[in-house]
Image (tube, rainbow, N blue to C red; front, side, top):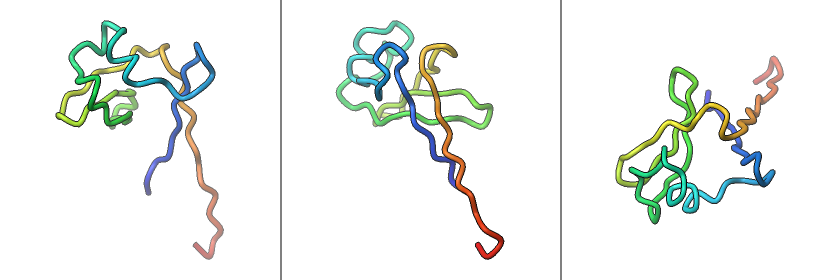
Amino acid sequence: MNMIFNVIDPKTGEYPDLEHVALTESWAKGLMYCDIDGFCINEDGNLLLMDECGNYAYCPPDRFQVNLECPVHSRED
């Protein structure tokens, strides 16, 4: 089963500007701001921001709001 989630920037109430995050936030400085791939959640439940070069950074625990979408399946599924 795939996990579907949305990430919200509590500062704006919208999806974060990932290029801006990579350019301005110290925890994301190692990422290629022009090649940001997106977010992932690892097996330990940590939120990470990744670039297309294989680099990643752990997001501070209180930086973003994560909303999980839990699909409902019937017994026939």
